[in-house]
Amino acid sequence: MTTETLSEIQVSYKPGLRSSKLINSSQDAFDILGELFPEETICLQEQFVVLYVNRANKVIGSYQLSKGGLTGTVADVRLILSVALKTLASGLILAHNHPSGNLKPSEADIGLTKRIKQSAKLMDIELLDHIIISNEGYYSFIDEGIL
Image (cartoon, rainbow, N blue to C red):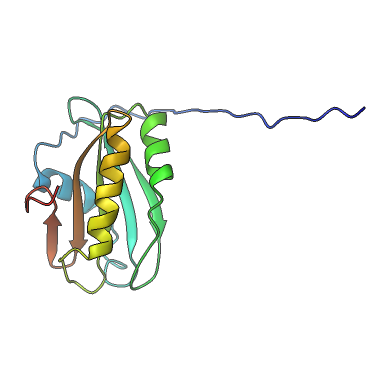
């Protein structure tokens, strides 16, 4: 008779200093996100970042989900929501850059946003915005009425 050992699962979240950054608009989110997209690579490599906020829209933290190539990166819905659950976030803001400088969302961007919104809603987490960033500025799904 053999004894099987099960994997141990640990969930942890160690908050740093309390952030006083409050998000009331897409511009507020863009100002924070601008610090997370390096100027040296914003036109070179696509990346996906998520901001997590509490009920008062104060930033809990950010998570760099992925880095890709010139034309795309992976955004795994399960990873986005697992971090939201771990941090007890009430809301999230998605962000990715378009190295081409084109701020218009692709059909894939719109479809992904809808899937994340629906999935987050099941867990009482609100998708507050999806922001596309380039060296030319930003595009907000909420400001444009897509979200």
